[in-house]
Image (cartoon, one colour):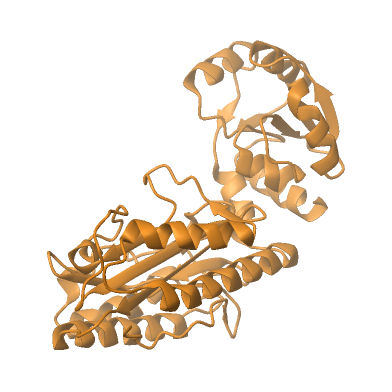
Length: 354
């Protein structure tokens, strides 16, 4: 925690602040080791305090590392306790609530809203985070093995999701609660696969389908993200061709991942190859993103990214081709950036036809 707190303060100082206040549970967890309803305060001397309602105090004391835990009433009580601590300090907060920010500004007019110190500190993973991410990724690989046994003609997308989530929860893997989807997973057969963020439906798998299975799940707070595309029955020649193009594109993207290279160069490696094959207009999203305590973190692996990769960043490489009303193909791995990148997924990327 000392290293994390030092990094957080380093980035806070870059924007003229000496104290960080976090409301978001991901940032609270990163700062303290406690995930719950509370406010975390990091002072310039490294002292860390959790202000929590009574119903959360017991867990906060059990889970947090090197923190003072203060009990306060919910709502206005929490803010009153917080304001007393912040007098005379140069404060940055991740608070997303307009009403809360307005209330804080009355007592601390110079308070800044910025998520930058939190996201910048979280970009580079420490050894404990990498260990958790590797275990999470192995669990996803095991779920792909389960897919090979469960995917069959007549099985519904929703049925496969239920079986995968039952298995996941047995491994202490849980939904990320990602707000832009109603489902924990993406399972998209046939024409549904042409939608990169398809919602899970009751459609039955049929012969000739390509089936996109995107697994994004949380383990001990951290999110691993992978995608495999399976075939079912008699697959068209175009589908096979597109699959091999995406597979080669992803291989080139993974080979481009190294410290001190640009995120854009990874995107270019994938995109340039797909463009050369004539399918460029069907690659309709960025090549990847950071992972960690959230599904999408910094850095962004895109054409417009100016970020330079650093050792021990955790990113995805996930090119895809989506043919409207026909099928989609995406292949994705979560990777730790090193001179020889650590691909955290071992499940094959050869086309499996079931």
